[in-house]
Length: 169
Image (cartoon, rainbow, N blue to C red):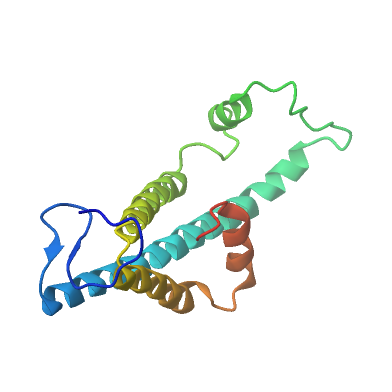
């Protein structure tokens, strides 16, 4: 039977029919797995933001000097309304503008996809409506944030807030 309200029980079916808990030991291992997956979600988000920040700082430092020297002082910026939908992305990568398919961009995209997948799996786990699973996921997200993402590095914090439109991350 699928619950539509929160319930407190050691008997829970999580994600697939074969992942059922009937004993306190299996329930405890399930809660531990939810906790660790939630902390891993925060670690992957931290890694993705760090990768993006390090690749953007290294590419902007190396490309800023030649770009400033080659750009005339009276050049008007490109009109975003006159640019085709993906024209600026495609022309920058083909013209050697430094925005091509770099290892950092592909790695960031892979990390983003994995992070989204783990986030959706955590959401589905919470939708089991088991109170222990819910608390385990929330506590794992909190501890993961504390350990991996609540440092004093202001640039990472600003980048993470500006980069992630998800309200729960």
